[in-house]
Length: 152
Image (tube, rainbow, N blue to C red):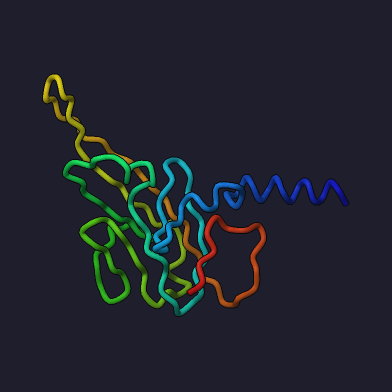
């Protein structure tokens, strides 16, 4: 029995459901990316997704010069705003009336400039953020736990 509990805890941690859960979500309900780690979340079918931010919390504390955002959907094609997909100029994404075929990997690439103070040399930096979104039919709990469990 103890081995099963330990194995469950390890699997839960390794799938991203562990101790970092609170670090991606803000009081406003925004979900921030985590460089190098996909953020996993479940959205109840026929509900709106949370607002996904193409940035991590550390980056929000720094100046970001000339940011651009490119969102790519589960079909590996760039996303554009339409009646289901809402993308803001500040890199935020929300999927309206979420359906099962919309499940999958959503990737955003943030590009911005850094400027060296001494030389005024500009450099373009790119950072990728991955969000795994799954449609969910009921209010039942899911194991292993996702990193974010969104339910309006």
